[in-house]
Amino acid sequence: MTERNFDRTSLRACSSCLRAKGVYPIKMTTRSAAVRKKILRIKPIGIIRSPFKKLVGMPIQAAFSKKGHGTVELLPQFKQGLQDLEGFSHIMLIYQFHKSKGYRLLCRPFLDEVQRGVFATRAPARPNPIGISIVKVKKIRGNTIEVASLDVLDGTPLLDIKPYVPRFDAPDSQSVGWFEKALGKKKARLKADDRYADIKRK
Image (cartoon, rainbow, N blue to C red):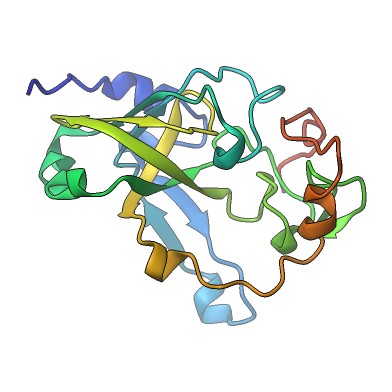
């Protein structure tokens, strides 16, 4: 297998939020003054390449992504961490919503027109803009993973990878809140629009 060269410049350029040396700071806000003053620094470990160049029109969840074929490219120094991952059919990608400009605690999710609490939605505009997607593994070559069912923008900074294990990650859920009615609609909105474009960074 040949290891693809990773373009560090493209990783730095993929988001104005990435600071020097690829450091992405997330400010933790809690009632504790001691914790509030701390900054959790997370360094991207790679970049996600997808066919989606614009937010509008892309799938809102991996489960609805039929054309989401792409690659997950790790920085070379993290290649060894992919050992044994080929034994899993699906993985969880944890990444930064690098195009998110801010958030509202009450927002209109893509599947609804009613305002919901942001933590009861999958909205990309969040206090800490972190996303999680479950994707199918097609092939692993060197430091690159070929995947399907992507629902992220091209150039998304990758923060972590975890194997998807149904026994751990798919509990027998009894209720899915407002999603149950929203997903039951005949014309449920399964693609993103520009409803978060006017949100400004706080």
